[in-house]
Image (cartoon, rainbow, N blue to C red):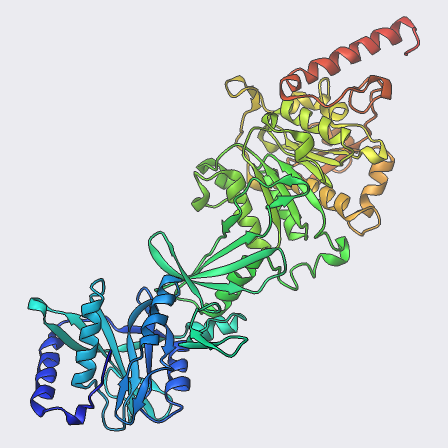
Length: 619
């Protein structure tokens, strides 16, 4: 088609028979069906079939998927010929260079009764192969009126399209083979999710001065290779500052798209640099046996961080809008991972996750992690789950030990700190920083075999006691904790316990955390008013009916079962360096100092006790 096109009916019959003979000889070879998007089918029908034959253009593809028609608006046409323009060749090169697709062949219309390529069509395509040695084959698609034959593609009620592949054969010969075609409803599926995939363009575009230039493809989908697989980039409409896209695989719908998002700007959050990459591939589950429309809509929401419109309808009356609230969760095991999920499901818009560990098999019994997460960093696995619940949530990840972090910077801008570590020295350091920064803290820990656990509330604004005064050195709860494993730097030993037992205590902590974030005037916050006013900030929750002191507290009710709870009054120690008298307070401790925090508190308490025994007034 490059050069003068000689009409087929003007050629000698011998040439026609020769081409048909080669085509017939090639039928024994098996060729996969040509896959075309429904968008390119619509573009062929709308652009080429809206005028009398002939009319043609180039077809571009993403891997095995033909997705784009480039109409030759500079070509020379007659009722039986198409002379391909030099401008078309230039435009194809520009689009390939801009990664909008690769040339896979041509399509053109024929007069009624001529459903297959002419010898000239074959010869012109053969010359295209000669000047494009990197191509092994080219497609020749012919559109004409008539009822579709076997392997033809239907174009509306009166049109059909036959597909033929011209490939390189032995001894510099080419082999022509008629092949089947299949239409992939990609554009219709995307449209159902509010997305658009442009499938047709023309060689020329008008500029503001009325000049005509070759197509540049500014509004066309680009192609990116992910793990050596070509994918179409389909942008997802989003709010300013956040960009999202679906990377659609060439084998769609058997292989699902990837949802990808990235932040515009420097990726900072709350005045500090976000440690996560600027470009983020989101969880993109895909079931090829299910309807794709709903799955595409879900991936599109994930790509731009768009929450389901009714996601918080059943909690909003209790908590209000928590999308502007930010919580820091330290320790992402059976307690922290569940509290984080409870916060996100209640509408909390931003979380910072801190944990240096990876997910292992033992975590699956009592956390929110899945088998596919084993071996993954806990922060990464949990962030993926939280974004799957609410694509709008913002998550910062810190995968270093808490003691290696600049906690003052990490906690900046936080509305709540959740302490769920298994290292009491780290918990003490975290509590000190939170109190010094005036940030409420909810801490949760389980006792041996999860027969009971504790929830500690610390609200500096209300001048409650700190975590150390509630359960730190000398606290009665220390005897109930699992033994520390000194081979793990003092971290508490993981004990055998059922997930429901752990989650009974965890849910009490989650409810308190949500109430603090929602505020004391909210329905979720009202129950905390009395507890905080009366300084009842240590909650003991039993998950076993006969644990500890509960049988003595309620001896007249033997039918009582777990869970049972009591909230004890906790008073600040005036000598506490965290929440005591101003003259005794010290700045938050570093990691190294944190190892000595319990000793410091114990020493100060002993000194205060001696002073009181001697009758000397405290300074």
